[in-house]
Amino acid sequence: MTDKENNDAPIIMYTTSWCSDCYRAKYLLDEYGISYVNIDVEENPEALAFVLGVNNGKRIVPTIVFPDKTILVEPSNALLAEKAGIEL
Image (cartoon, rainbow, N blue to C red; front, side, top):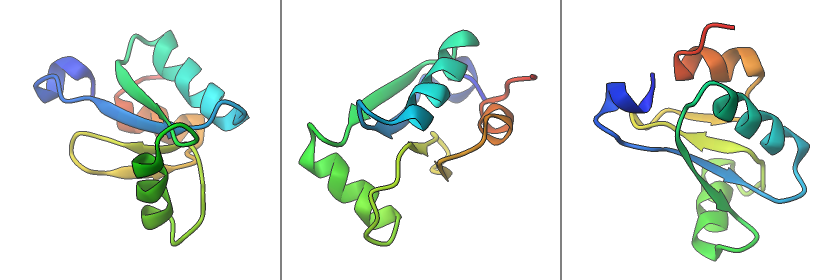
């Protein structure tokens, strides 16, 4: 699913600056022109609280929320691509 297919609702990616999986996920979406909003949980206490709540008290990133409210946590490239409508 791309931005154009979901009425411009954003994908929200909760990340940290030091997370290699976060860089990988952002790179994949960037490479295919998929728009998303990046929120660094180290700079945003509300975002950190959300991530902790979704992940049973664990700070697991990337935590990615799609417009349909689906949440992927540390997804593989294949799973992220499938959900984002990317053909690898």
